[in-house]
Image (tube, rainbow, N blue to C red; front, side, top):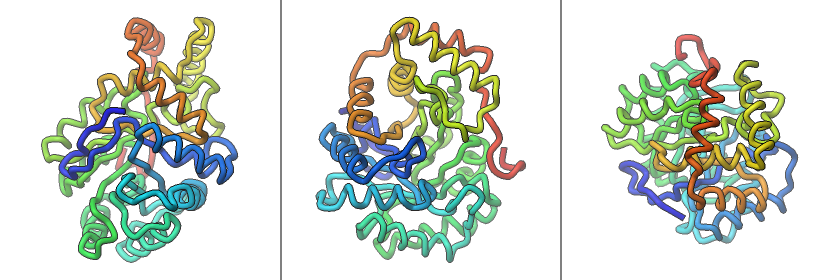
Length: 309
């Protein structure tokens, strides 16, 4: 496993990291036994950064991760979660709510401190509130020892960049913007790095768009993008290849991020992802795939308040 320093935090994180959304059954049903096996397989493989959120599975992902990590020495993993988003249309970025949310997450995760607390999908809030109320409230928790570092997350790169220009968070998590069909994170990340912020790339498979089975029904991508990715998966199958494996290798090979978060639900998925990350990317075949995806290059979808897109 390779490691990089996460911006100015000084945290040495695995370049392949564990995304916790699947532990909340976001991509299919799971059990605590499966979740624990997946987390332990990740630790055994050298993955040390685990990211989750209260939103994932309506808190069940945090609970599952907490159970899985119980008994593991605290210095063997780096733990991140989020505040502000609690349901599909449930957002509360007030200082009081995010402060209480941290205590709730600590209880579910069965730990005394978080290495990283992040504003979840900030584009669903007013950016003036995020900058002037939410982030300062989280920063105030450092003194209590409950959190070590504060980050922001979201889909629209514009919203992340605007918020960061006013309040340069310790980390910036972007998702679905450094993958086979969308590489716009590469242009946004340098401005964040100039201010010593760590960069996290999440969803290199674009929340299932670039998986072999295709995205879940709830995926918000426009039809043209879904169809193009589905066709790319079929092309790979015809060649005896895996779109998901190739997409992960692409995302890791020349990543503008310090770490890449991949959702993992089972120990078998962990093993596949670790093996894909260790293999040299087939750049020729990847280039062919990108040519096929060229009609939807950098295509995305709106998220949050209209003014934040």
